[in-house]
Amino acid sequence: MAAKKRPSTAAPATVNQPESSINTEKPKSSDSSPEPPIAPAKVYLIFKISLIFLIPYFYLIFYHYDIESELRRSILINAIVSLIGFFVTVTMIPVASKYVLRRNLFGYDINKKGTPQGSVKVPESLGIIVGAVFLVVAILFQYFNFTADSNWLVEYNAALSSICFMMLLGFVDDVLDVPWRVKLLLPSIAALPLLMAYAGHTTIIIPKPLVSYVGLEILDLGCIYKLYMWLLAIFCTNSINIHAGINGLEVGQTVVIAAAILIHNIMQIGASADPEYKLAHAFSIYLVQPMLATSLALLSYNWYPSSVFVGDTFTYFAGMTMAVAGILGHFSETLLIFFLPQVLNFLLSVPQLAGIVPCPRHRLPKFDPKTGLLTGTNDGTLVNLFLRQLGRMSEQSLCVTLLVFQAMCCGFCFLLRWLLTGWYK
Ligand code: UD1
Ligand code: MG
Image (cartoon, rainbow, N blue to C red):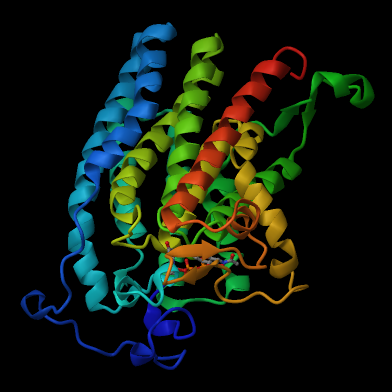
């Protein structure tokens, strides 16, 4: 969030302004801008990290599974348009950074407070570029895949409306800094287009061990199913936003979960013979591929040391996109297991979110400028828990550890699904 509205965080005393101050400065011309350009993108690092996912992913698509050529073609076209989206995002972020800085939309890096880097104005809300490029890619892709009378088109566009609405509210939050209890409600508004347009089934398959107790194999939940969809969207968006505050963590967790979702989608498409089921998972791929590509572009600037911050625009956008993919792809239970670290972080946060324990504006670790290490505080977050359990760490090591934990939870989900196949459903 823009530091001008957050004097109590990490902003040095010289830039403190009243909490309610409004930026009345005229934008300066680009020639007279005093801000130095942001550090270049770490594209090579991102490329190396991406290979860990891309090699098994394309192996599954092209060799391991016998996927129909039509479907494979659509997935490939989507991947190519997403790749173009990656390069556009990498190019646009430095340009947009200049504009957001001119409008005083910046933050101070709290985990570098007391060092020269801690007083650098870091451009905020760059998630707006990711979201905008994502929307263009997702809208253009319809031309290559859907016929005009496709039923999917309605849900696809409702999904895009919810994602777009969520981005708007996230950006509003970044600019206006709404109180965090109000923040929690924003996704409930943004999910409305999807809920209103949803005409898919509202049934759930009862797990086999429970069938004898319930007396049914399939249960129609009706309106309760929509309530579940609504709560899932609220949870996914907020849970990404509150597992944050370390360079690279917001985007890193999104990238890991998105990679797991894509592998899951391909495995389900490859193993199923039901065309409806395959379409549902392909639908998720068409949303998650562009999100992954544009998020990787943002990560190349947000990785430690961050030269841009992502803002609530990004965290809300990413959470809503994954929620929508899980809902319309009908794999919300799997999605929740991919979200295990976020669930743990949420459970740890409940006392502070519920107001039982005081909740400061930022629940971040304590930074020691002499050693450059972070120490866990008593705030109820996974970040602090890891530091308390594993000892003091640098910001980068902490982020890598948390992302490895995220990847392990996704791996655990695949293992669980494999163990329970045939027995559970
Ligand atoms: C949520 C968390 C808050 C956490 C914040 C970090 C809850 C209830 N809220 O608040 O505890 O501190 O996210 O994003 O759990 N920042 C850094 N380094 C980073 C990323 C962000 O210092 O790598 C700081 C910057 O000052 C930036 C600010 O966090 O300007 C952004 O905070 P914002 O996203 O607005 O916080 P919330 O989402 O409200
Ligand atoms: Mg945030």
